[in-house]
Each structure stands twice: as C-alpha cells, then as structure tokens.
Length: 92
Image 1 (spheres, rainbow, N blue to C red):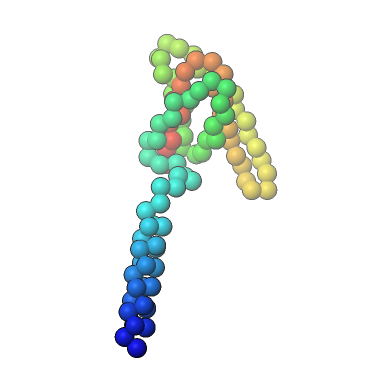
Image 2 (image 1 turned 180 degrees about the horizontal axis):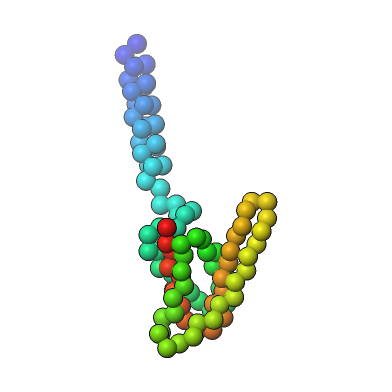
C-alpha cells in the first residue's frame, strides 16, 4: 500500500512539472511588445494589427509590396521589401 501512495505522489509531481513547463513556452504566435525584425529584400513577412515598418535610413526610401489574402480563416496581410532597408516592428 505504501508503494502505491508513493507512485501516486510521483505521478502528481511529474504532471505538475509538465504543466509548469507548458506555461513557460516561448511560442510567438502573437506579436510581442517591440519585437524588431531587420527585413531582407524579397522576403515576405506576415503582418498583424499594430505592426509598423520603419526605414533604417531617414533619407532612404524603402519600398514595399503589400499582399492581402481573404479566406475562410480570416484576413492575412503580408509585406515584402522591394528596395532600401527597413525594420518590421511588431506591436501589440
């Protein structure tokens, strides 16, 4: 009987550790505060509400292409840097 209680205690402790590990996941499905991405020419980035694009050089024109996809899962927006250099700043 003592062994059974000891095993139950061990299982409860292991489950608590697993649940705690899941809570500290580094998943970034949503944008975080001020996450900055240096954009590369020709690479498409998905953008969310609150995101912004800023050129790296004030006097330089950064040109982008915007693609808007409307589907059953909702709206998705993508941008591609065509010329210049810019940062994609993720907002909340």
